[in-house]
Length: 94
Image (cartoon, rainbow, N blue to C red; front, side):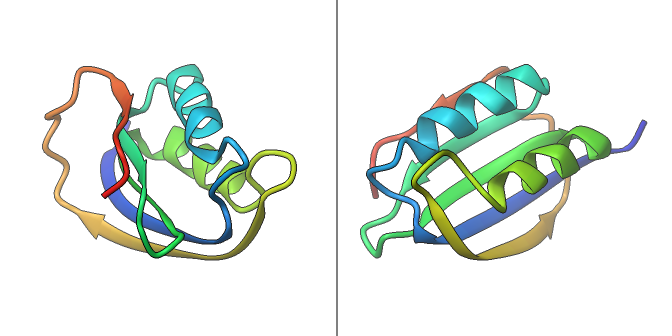
């Protein structure tokens, strides 16, 4: 198993459509650790740590998001896996 860490920014109509909550549910289902939050510029930001296969499944889900979301872009940055999280959290807007 390969463990990875990604830092992602999701653009489009992704706030006010329960994107963070649904991302959290999906991450927990896939045993992914990290966090998700809204940004003041309208994007959603997340740090994801877990098995590569499960991270890819979550990214596939993020391409569509929950009902009423319209995802126009996902910026993905690979980071060094740190195993620093014990759960997946929804953080406050920054």
